[in-house]
Length: 172
Image (cartoon, rainbow, N blue to C red):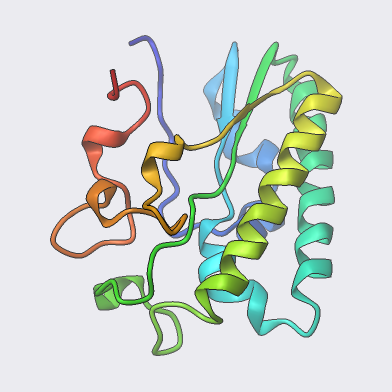
């Protein structure tokens, strides 16, 4: 209730930063709270294509932190939240072609992508704590016994998204 959602489906963290986080919110007037949620696509398709994926991720995250600071300063937003990436699902999941990039549903192994997701989560936790912002982590109940994103919480029959009943505010 009383919230506005501005979705940028398919927008990577890299793409959002290139455009500028301030540009994503500049037309909305006075805001009391902003939640930023980017990075899943970068992990799924792009970072492991780089020669030094962890270093590339760190460069992105430093810029993410810097641009969020600029948003806070420019727009005097009292409450900021940053969402951590989802756990990585098992590679056996059938993904529709709309979720593919360069002919593949993902790039790199599930373990490599999960390591990047965990590293990104640690860094988001660090910088949100440093600035007094909120950090949102997806519930551990989203994971199966192997620590993968459970197919049970994903849209059916095929998707890379969590099902609407698991969106924030829907779980009791």
